[in-house]
Amino acid sequence: MGCLISVVIATYNRGYCIADAIDSVLIAFSGCKAGVEVIVADDCSTDTTEKLVREKYQKHIDGGVLSYCKLSSNKGVTGARNEGIKHAQGKWIVFLDSDDTLIAGVGQRMVKELQTYSDAPVIFFRCVDQNNNKVGTDFGQSSQLVNLKSYLQHGSRGECLVVVKKSLMLEVPFEESLRGYEGLTVARIMKHSGKAAILSSIIARRYIQVGDDRLSTNVGFASRMNLIGKGHWLMAKEFFNDAPIKVVMLYVLKSLAYRVLHFKNKILN
Image 1: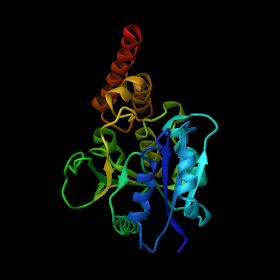
Image 2: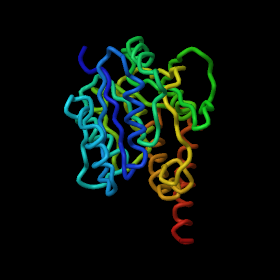
Image 3: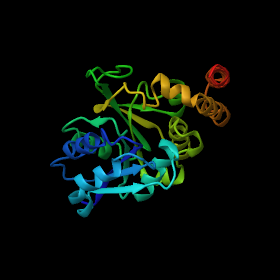
Image 4: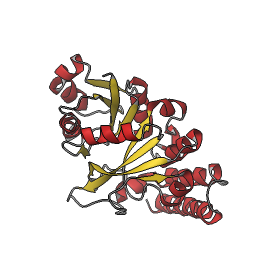
């Protein structure tokens, strides 16, 4: 079988943990008959990331299981992911953070889910945190449809492992100027495809919620408040006709709030 899944791992100065992420993919899909590849998209790291990956995984690189691509300048996670997408051979692209891991043995279950919902543009897989607690709303054991209106109102109901069709990612790439805020692109893809996403009940990812270099921490948010505000504004602007007015206004208010916090933070620092 040809390559079905490309796991894109965007990374920046994560030489201390990138091997755990790569190993988790290899273990998760061990024995899986579906074709799987790993693409490390290095966002111009200045640490030992490249040396480590090339030395430890040379056999996988030679065998075409792993590809390493390094950006010439730092573009943020969205820019790195776009670069990884260009090198991907799979029908589906899995976006795994470089300090997170896949759950051991989950590969075959993921493949089955992707085959079951082959017409979906996006599939969200559930996560647990570093303490093995479920992240987000517990909605039961059955996978659910998530249309655009629901996504704009509720998101993916908690942090998810996002899997998207490569063909759609090529047509609607991540917004690199935001250096994050991937939810905007997911919403764009759903609208572009005209199809609902799938919220899977399968737990596929261990999501680490600690560490100062995570965008989701207080430190990460503080450094990106202006861009987050811009992201909220684009959501309100682009999906004005796709969500209830109260949801649109909430995006506007969040945008203003983040802009104010950004300005206040600049004054204080």
